View 1 (cartoon, rainbow, N blue to C red):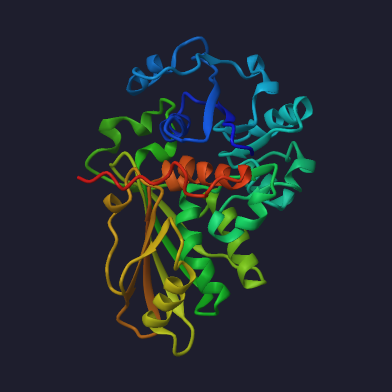
View 2 (tube, rainbow, N blue to C red; view 1 turned 135 degrees about the horizontal axis):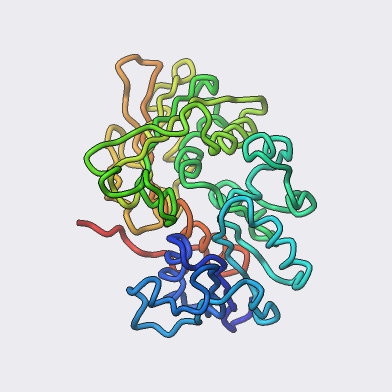
Amino acid sequence: MTDSKARIAILGASGYTGAELVRLLVRHPRVDIVALTADRKAGQSMAEVFPQFAPLSLPTLITIDEVDWSSVDLAFCALPHGTTQQVIKRVFETAPHIKIVDLSADFRLTDAGAYEQWYGHPHQALELQQEAVYGLAELYRDDIRKARLVANPGCYTTTAILPVVPLIEAGAIEPDHIVIDAKSGVTGAGRSAKESLLFSEVADGMNAYGVGGHRHMAELDQEFSKAAGRTIVPSFTPHLIPMSRGIYNTIYLKTGAGVGAEGVHRVLADFYRGEAFVHVLPLGQVPHSRFVKGSNMAFIGVIKDRAPDRVIVIATTDNLVKGASGQAVQNMNLVLGFPEATGLEQIALFP
């Protein structure tokens, strides 16, 4: 991009990730929001949907068909899974110059067969899947810079891949012994009205869901297998916990011979040294989800287990920021040639 501001559209702005994109982008010095779309809420102002935006002058929500694509440089797609493939295909047919960061799962899996297996229908834009880049900047930064279509990773997977992939690549752990005990706040399920997400259903308890078959397993299989150079099938169980934001992954690993917790910590500290958004805590320190709430940070802790060949790695992110919209802005910065941390310097909200 030149010194002029990039023109940004947000498709699906009436959901939590769309609202989080607006929150981050309204103070971004290099962009202007020129279009916001919604389906049922088209015609309303953003302030009517999310009153926190009342002091701001923002575009009125419109349908996707009403967007003037000639005035857009980059679009964020915060649309439901299974709908984005056809939408992005139409956008590129209308305006091939546009860059897109997709926050759905529609372009995350490189294997079309795996996509059909996990999502229950054939991929609708295979030619675009071939050019999509998995948008985890810490691993694929150079590819993202050259991409037209970036597939933003899932929140659970971001929080698992960041600590585990460097350890697999370094040979520091046994890749066939990966157990991920994952927990998410309620916003991870989106904003649609669901009985299981009512306050009285969620408060004062927790529950596992998607046990043995959560769709994020496909991303973990893909990225862990790529790092290992062979098929890896980790154990992964997600849980819903009564908080608004946050991902908290407790990961149980078996280390390589003579590696131990110290070696695991050394690998991660070296790998992420100098990274803006991944912070490895001192050995033995346990991260809390409140350390990252509202920020684009991932905090990682490494703790010794009782057995010398086992280690516990704990990683936490805000599912709406580093797990979704913040990571999407990070990818936008790379795609448009801006400094990667621009607009993402927020420190966690605590208390």
